[in-house]
Image (tube, rainbow, N blue to C red; front, side, top):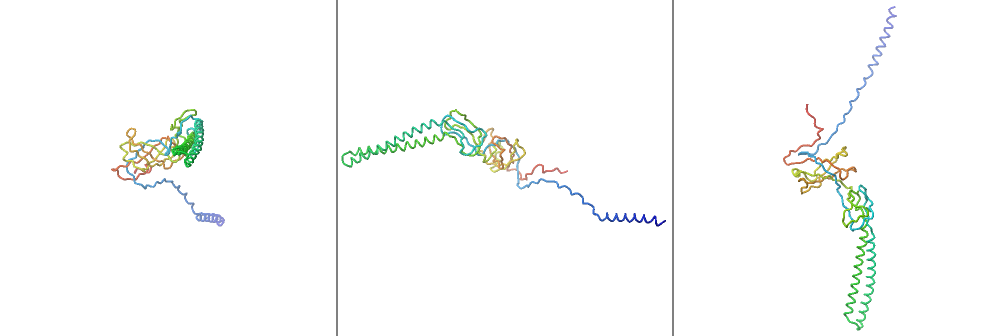
Length: 303
């Protein structure tokens, strides 16, 4: 009877020990790794001193030009409008060419007459010279005929020069783009009379963009060429651009402020002339102590 009760007990004890041994052989699972927190780093390399000032400005094209006809006339056709992109040599507008075509035709007729006159005066000069050599004529007749012959040759050269000018004026009735760029402003319409040199278009190139700002007279001495600055635009505030001072006026303008320009060093196609901008500059003074310029977000209050 005792053995009957002991055997099941022994079996249970053996199973428990076996289960305990198997559990002891298994290693506990490692704890999950801690997530790595992203840290934004900025290299502080340049010393800076002074005070940070913000100025408002307007974007301008680094290379711009006003285009006009070199001859006067009636506008026949305008092929571009504000905002259109243009390529070098593209026809922008034309004048009525008929008056210049008529002038050219008249000069060509005068040139034919001048050349015919050369033939006649040359023949007369050779005749008078031959008669004089035969002893039957006077020397003064030879001199007069020679003068007329030389004058007729000069007349031909004069008419050729007039013809070249007339051809050039006719060609100038077509206004072409001087470079690749875009139309900023348009000042003419078809059937309007324009004078020589009258502004027809404002154009600009996409080679570079600048921001024009004004610096108060009490701060202009703290601005220097190649000074760096940050540029922001309210129309697309998702990016901060970098600029460099490339022009400092020596003469004060409106409200005794000095115009300066910063070239945008990393422009994109979104930046166009006329867009307003905010420029942040670090004004440097002789009495300022040197320090390192770091973002405000990198500074934490000590608890």
